[in-house]
Length: 251
Length: 345
Image (cartoon, rainbow over all chains, first blue to last red; front, top):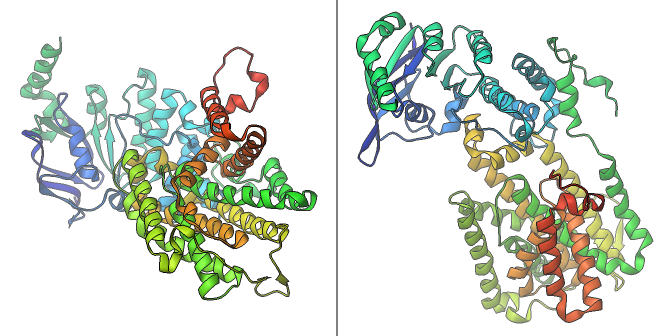
């Protein structure tokens, strides 16, 4: 299996705190990889490092074998590394349709055109059509994003990432705040992605994790606690203890 | 408006009719009736109000200046308290060009636009970093520096006296037989000239804001983090729009210098930057025409109040602004909603 995205001894310090501590991770082509761990384990920090939102203190990030550690965030998207956010990051004054059309035009290389209207490209419109239908956003496509209900905004959050045609998709708690019944639907959409897309998922719902992932990495205090096959991790008593410990601390 | 050609072959979906997204997306750039009415009103104002040409010319120049700021502020979300830097630079360039090189207005206008665009390109690096407060101070600083330069370099700019004796030649439209339009005292030639430039800029700006580039500006205004996360280069786009806006502001300044035959330190003054911001606050940002409506209201208000009570103009415009901002523009322009149940938009 070919490795698409990898980290080598990645470290990120905030003052004295090592939010990411010597993490070496490999995402192979078509991976269905989950990243779990108690709150504050450094999961989102790791995604921020992978996408270039944060700069690592040390260590390297490799994409297709190329060092992309200092590559600008938007250029990583151009190379297929795309993410969603735990807290919706949307374009509030745009409509779902224009948001998606813009994202589609970026990967089609037409987003710098300044003379023809965005709507002139039939191929862009067709791609938007598919995405809007798949995420049940067609009815609200012309409403300003800020006026949408939370559930619709959450769907748009994920649709926007898919509009970028990811090769590596980093999902930061994609169903956070989504009602129980609709979670499955979102995951069905994610499951329907092309098999060669590598997916890294952060999720707290263990049922969803164990249904979706083939590989699991457990992060504790910024470091890799254990990694392995989903069955093995599910049975690992130490992993249970980590979560149980957290539950006790919270309870 | 029906658009039969909009139905493109796309996958049929159970929930939306075929091509609904394509139709909607095209609709975003469709001409609205009031836009057409506005474009029709421009030449009509020239025909029907010949005695007001001087005032209208002033309004059109302020409107052009405000459109420039709207691209930066309303679309890209970059605040500026020093937009007069480009206005003034265009004005001085045009005046100097007419005085020292050649008096042809159109060549002078093109030179002024190019010079202002260059200044915008160079200073755009200053607005890329920091917060809104940083940008307010940096833009204010740039305008102040240029003001002082124009003041001190009196061998070139005439210093505090301004550049006097700028004589413009007649307008000769390139590639056509149209020539020999002299600027006259009634200001009708000047107003026609300004109107043509305003209309051309509006048309270009309109294409720009509906294009993928224009939509990307609104996207990075709303959320820079996400804009980068869909693959947009935020700094490059800010540099581009800042340069275009500087060019338009420079055109407005050049028109002022050319149609009044005069450039003074006033064009760089802080009140110019503040005034154009007020105009946009009055007219509204982010829909391109706010500058025009704002300029009309602002200038008419100015003339009305100044004629009635010349000393207290600032008091009344201040009161107007406070009421406008507190009530909200949406409600303010819809008087029938003032006394209804307080339903906020």
